[in-house]
Image (cartoon, rainbow, N blue to C red; front, top):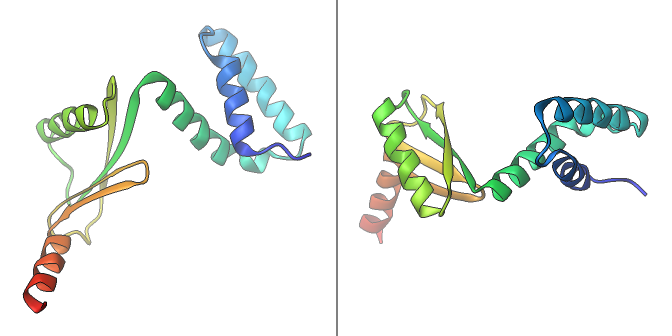
Length: 133
């Protein structure tokens, strides 16, 4: 029976929960050895992504990706952080600002599978569809 990346991630989370930094280092080293032994080291990136999702859920952390044309100011990132924390009832929010020069203006916010598109391109598309209909 093949172990899935989700099963690995859950096991890693449960093994490392409430452990000291030193204990976690040893556990992770042993975990990597198990992946190598099972021939599944190629799953490491997928396992880490799933581990991060589990960790965030268990600790009330909301991870968000905010895409904008230019780097957002510290003040704007703080406002977005508070907005996301309140909207998703998180204890904490982690906002990652990605730059995309193809966005003419505005922002796109991604949290999990939800996308809030407040880009200029999207607003113009909506306006066009309203005017044409």
